[in-house]
Image 1 (cartoon, rainbow, N blue to C red):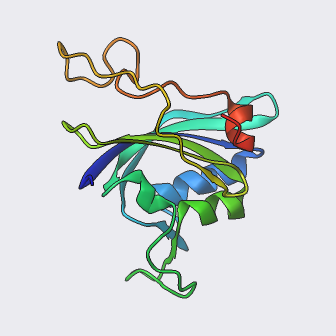
Image 2: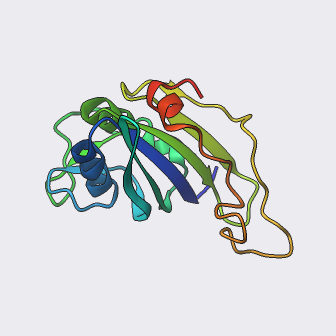
Length: 165
């Protein structure tokens, strides 16, 4: 199991406010909620409208692996962080905010990789067999030439939203 995981995440929502709140929670800037084991969240592409949906790409790192986002280890709804924030799982956030996510995660310099898809209702579809674009041995820069060269390609926003990737 990974100890530190890098991730690329595409988030999709029907409205920009939900997407903005999701980013705020993911980045630790929301006054009420916190996503378990998230260390950084950098908006790689600003939220933009794609048909009837809004989408954005966020990159960052977290403890263990992206699977920890699915179910926070504290099922008690009253659990709060030291700052008084409610600990949330990614499933809760997707369901509560109507946001769907496609996530590619990996442990740096290791073969540990994981792919996760959550639809806007928080339903999970984890597909470990999605195509990965391995990082070139000539370069250790994950953004070399093709953007996210070491991660798979993101799916269409509509397919992510309804979980049919």
